Image (cartoon, rainbow, N blue to C red):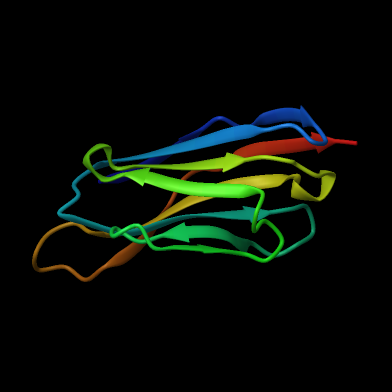
Length: 121
Protein backbone atom coordinates (compact mmCIF):
# COMPACT_ATOMS: atom_id res chain seq x y z
CA UNK A 1 0.00 0.00 0.00
CA UNK A 2 1.02 3.58 -0.67
CA UNK A 3 0.33 6.40 1.76
CA UNK A 4 0.71 10.14 1.40
CA UNK A 5 0.58 11.98 4.71
CA UNK A 6 0.32 15.77 4.79
CA UNK A 7 1.04 18.09 7.68
CA UNK A 8 1.48 21.79 8.34
CA UNK A 9 -1.94 23.27 7.71
CA UNK A 10 -3.61 25.68 10.09
CA UNK A 11 -5.06 29.13 10.61
CA UNK A 12 -3.02 32.20 9.74
CA UNK A 13 -3.68 35.89 9.21
CA UNK A 14 -3.51 37.44 5.77
CA UNK A 15 0.10 38.16 4.86
CA UNK A 16 1.37 35.29 6.96
CA UNK A 17 3.17 32.10 5.99
CA UNK A 18 2.69 28.36 6.32
CA UNK A 19 4.75 25.38 5.22
CA UNK A 20 3.06 22.16 4.16
CA UNK A 21 4.83 18.80 4.09
CA UNK A 22 3.88 15.51 2.49
CA UNK A 23 5.66 12.20 2.94
CA UNK A 24 5.10 9.23 0.66
CA UNK A 25 5.55 5.76 2.14
CA UNK A 26 4.77 2.14 1.46
CA UNK A 27 5.33 0.01 -1.61
CA UNK A 28 7.06 2.53 -3.89
CA UNK A 29 9.19 1.31 -6.78
CA UNK A 30 9.46 4.66 -8.56
CA UNK A 31 8.30 8.14 -7.56
CA UNK A 32 7.76 10.64 -10.35
CA UNK A 33 6.09 14.04 -10.15
CA UNK A 34 4.69 15.29 -6.85
CA UNK A 35 2.42 18.21 -6.31
CA UNK A 36 -0.14 20.14 -4.36
CA UNK A 37 -3.77 20.76 -5.23
CA UNK A 38 -6.46 22.60 -3.29
CA UNK A 39 -10.21 22.63 -3.02
CA UNK A 40 -12.19 25.49 -1.57
CA UNK A 41 -15.81 25.04 -0.43
CA UNK A 42 -18.14 24.84 -3.41
CA UNK A 43 -15.29 24.80 -5.91
CA UNK A 44 -13.48 22.18 -7.93
CA UNK A 45 -10.07 20.90 -6.96
CA UNK A 46 -7.36 22.95 -8.66
CA UNK A 47 -3.64 22.66 -9.23
CA UNK A 48 -1.41 24.74 -6.98
CA UNK A 49 2.09 23.56 -7.89
CA UNK A 50 3.94 20.51 -9.15
CA UNK A 51 7.56 19.39 -9.20
CA UNK A 52 9.16 16.61 -11.23
CA UNK A 53 11.73 14.19 -9.88
CA UNK A 54 14.33 16.32 -11.66
CA UNK A 55 13.17 19.49 -9.93
CA UNK A 56 11.20 21.20 -12.70
CA UNK A 57 8.39 23.22 -11.15
CA UNK A 58 5.04 24.48 -12.34
CA UNK A 59 2.75 26.93 -10.54
CA UNK A 60 -0.75 28.21 -11.00
CA UNK A 61 -0.85 31.88 -11.85
CA UNK A 62 -2.67 32.67 -8.62
CA UNK A 63 0.24 31.54 -6.43
CA UNK A 64 3.23 32.35 -8.62
CA UNK A 65 5.74 34.47 -6.73
CA UNK A 66 4.17 33.68 -3.35
CA UNK A 67 4.43 29.89 -3.05
CA UNK A 68 7.51 27.71 -3.44
CA UNK A 69 7.43 23.93 -4.01
CA UNK A 70 10.42 21.75 -3.26
CA UNK A 71 11.19 18.09 -2.63
CA UNK A 72 13.75 15.76 -1.10
CA UNK A 73 13.83 12.65 -3.26
CA UNK A 74 15.72 10.50 -0.78
CA UNK A 75 13.03 11.23 1.82
CA UNK A 76 10.11 10.93 -0.62
CA UNK A 77 8.92 14.28 0.70
CA UNK A 78 7.46 17.35 -0.98
CA UNK A 79 7.06 20.76 0.63
CA UNK A 80 4.97 23.81 -0.13
CA UNK A 81 6.18 27.08 1.36
CA UNK A 82 3.29 29.53 1.26
CA UNK A 83 4.06 33.21 1.80
CA UNK A 84 1.94 36.36 1.59
CA UNK A 85 -1.16 34.28 2.16
CA UNK A 86 -4.52 35.72 1.15
CA UNK A 87 -8.05 34.83 2.32
CA UNK A 88 -8.68 33.36 -1.14
CA UNK A 89 -5.96 30.77 -0.44
CA UNK A 90 -8.29 29.20 2.12
CA UNK A 91 -8.90 25.59 1.09
CA UNK A 92 -8.13 21.98 1.83
CA UNK A 93 -4.71 21.26 0.35
CA UNK A 94 -4.04 17.81 -1.06
CA UNK A 95 -0.72 16.18 -1.82
CA UNK A 96 -0.45 14.20 -5.06
CA UNK A 97 2.23 11.82 -6.28
CA UNK A 98 2.70 9.74 -9.42
CA UNK A 99 3.97 6.35 -8.30
CA UNK A 100 4.89 3.00 -9.77
CA UNK A 101 4.57 0.27 -7.13
CA UNK A 102 6.58 -2.34 -9.04
CA UNK A 103 8.14 -2.92 -12.43
CA UNK A 104 5.03 -4.64 -13.82
CA UNK A 105 2.40 -2.10 -12.84
CA UNK A 106 1.49 1.16 -14.55
CA UNK A 107 2.04 4.58 -13.06
CA UNK A 108 -0.83 5.74 -10.85
CA UNK A 109 -1.77 8.92 -9.06
CA UNK A 110 -2.08 8.82 -5.29
CA UNK A 111 -3.61 11.41 -2.97
CA UNK A 112 -3.21 12.41 0.64
CA UNK A 113 -6.12 12.94 2.99
CA UNK A 114 -5.83 16.74 2.81
CA UNK A 115 -4.89 19.45 5.28
CA UNK A 116 -6.93 22.56 5.98
CA UNK A 117 -5.40 25.97 5.37
CA UNK A 118 -7.46 28.92 6.58
CA UNK A 119 -6.43 32.54 6.04
CA UNK A 120 -8.25 35.25 7.95
CA UNK A 121 -8.53 38.83 6.72
